[in-house]
Image 1: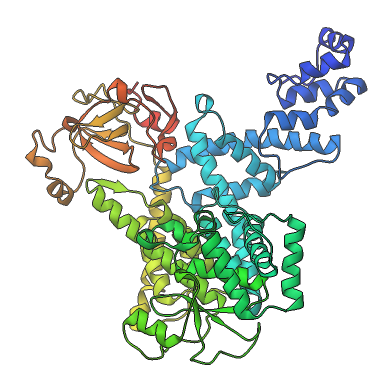
Image 2 (image 1 turned 120 degrees about the vertical axis):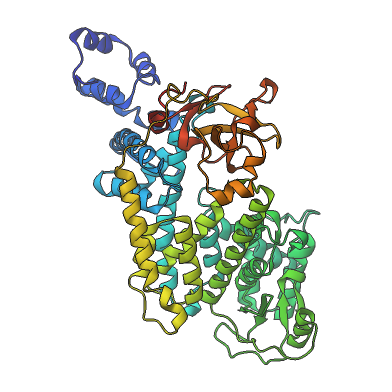
Length: 612
C-alpha cells in the first residue's frame, strides 16, 4: 500500500481480463479503497472500470448509507475516500480515548469533544462520520472490537446531541405561539435515547396517522377491528383536509372522535402501576406502547387536536397535567368554570372544580388556571425525568447495596440540563434546579469543564442561599479540572502477579459470586481492601476471615453494577453458565470475549502486565 504504482506484470494481467471478470475481482472484500485507487491510476480504461464500481463498493461493504447519496461516479469515489480516511482517523481517536478515559469514572463531553475536532480539521461530513460509527457498532460479535464499539457508541451519541443542541436553540428562539409541545417532547426523547429514538419526521407521521384516523371517523369512513383504516392514504388525507377546511364538525364532535380513536380503537391509556417507568416520559415510547403519564398523553392529544383545527392549551395543574380548550389559537383565556380535558383518564371532560376535588379531595377553583407556555411544559418534562432517574438510582442502590450503580439516564439528563443552561433563552430552568443539577455533576465528577462554563457567567445572587452558585461551585469545578489533568498526565501504577503472590485470579476472568450468585468479569484487583473504614464497617468485611487482609477485585456484574468483591467470595464461573457479561462498560476495559474469558485492552494491560 505504500507504493502507489502497480508492477508491469500486474498491469498486463489486469488489462488483459474481460471487463466482467475484472469487475468481480475488484469487488473482492480483500481489496481496500487504497488498492482500488492504485488500480484506478494505471490508465483511463481501468479508471473507467473502477469508477463504475464505487456505488456498489459502498453499498455492499458498508451499512448506513441511506442518508448519504451520490449522483455521479465522482461523488461516490469522493465518499469512499472520505470513508476510508474517516476509518483511519477514528482508529487513532479510539486509541486516544481508551488511554485517557480509562482513568475517568465517566466518558463525558469534555473528552468527546475530540469528535467535533475531527469534523473541523478533516474533510468529513457529519453523515459520513455517523455512518462509520454506526458500522463499528454493527460489526458481528465474532469480529467486533469491544473497546472501539464502546467509544463509537459514545461518539455517535455525542454527535447526535450536538445536532439536537442546535435544534433546541432554534426552538427556544421562536415566539411562544410558534413553539409546539410536540417538538420539545421529541427533542427530549431524542436526547435521552439518541441511538434509539426515531426522527422528528417519523414521530410526526405517527401523529398525522392518528389525526387522519380521527378525520375518517368524523366523515364516516369504515375501519378494521384493530383500528386500521381501510381507505388509502390519499382518502385519509382528503378526509383530514375536509375536517380542517369545511369546519362542519363542532369542537365537541372532534374531541369525541379523538377520544373514540385514541382510547377505544388504539387503546391509549394511563400508565397505572407502571407510572414511574422512565419510558412514559418519552413521546416515541408512548406512541409505541400506547401507555403514558399525563404530560406525554396530553402532548399527543394536543398534537392530534391541532391537526384537526382544535387548539388546546396545557395547564400545569398541581399534581396533574391537563388541557384547556380555547376559542382560537390566540383567543382569550377561558372562563374559570370552563371544562378541562384529562388525557390521562381517556380524555374525560371536567370542570376545574371537579378536577380540584379529584386531585386534592376538596372542592373549589384551583389557583393555577392560566395556560402554561411551551417552555413551562419543557421544564416540567425535565423535572419529571429528574425525579424518575433519581428514583431509579435509589431503587437500584437499595437492590444492590454492596455495589455501585452507574446511573446512565441520570448522566444523559445532566448533560441535557447543562447544555440547555449554555443557551441564551434558558430562563425556564429555575435557579434552585440549576444548583441541584450542578451539585450532582460535582458529586459525580461529571463534565467539569462544561459545567464550569455554565457557572462562571452566572447572574448575581438574589438570596443568601444562592451564594453557592457563583462562588463555591467555580472553586470546586476548577479543582476538579486540575485534578483531572494531573491524573491524565500521570503514568498508571503497575500491579504485578510476580510481586503479589496471593492474588489467585486475573483481569478478564469470568467469575461467579458464591453467595449472591451474580456472574461478573474482573477488571482490576488490589492486594488488600483499599476502601474507606466506613465502607469496610458497612460491608462487615472483617467479620469474614481473612477480612480486609486478602485480595479484593473490581468486577463488572451482569446486572449492570460495579462491585468490589473479596477473593474468598469469588469462584470461577462454571462452564454451563459461561457467557458474555451484559455490562455497558465491558468495552472500556476489554477488546473481545473468547468464549471463556475477556482479552484486556492496551490501557488495562499496561496496569496489569502479568495477567494472562
